[in-house]
Length: 88
Image 1 (cartoon, rainbow, N blue to C red):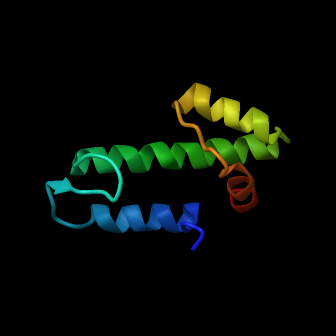
Image 2 (spheres, helix red, strand yellow):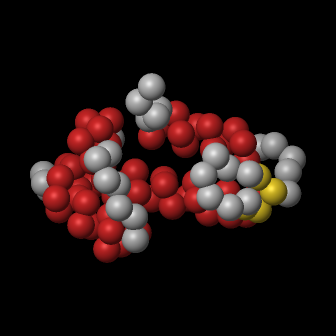
């Protein structure tokens, strides 16, 4: 598959956070606490909002990538076209 989409990812994270757990073992990376899962979700929600704003400002893919790296220390790799399409 294509790895899903941003809207479904946020919905899934919200559902996970309703569960009773202390630690989660993600598919990638180290074990995290429930508070860390919430922080990751919050960061990705902020990234979504920023991409929407930048898209509405007619920023280029390169400008959006540079902003995400600068503001969130997050390199979206090849995800920018799909993000822009979904988060308009």
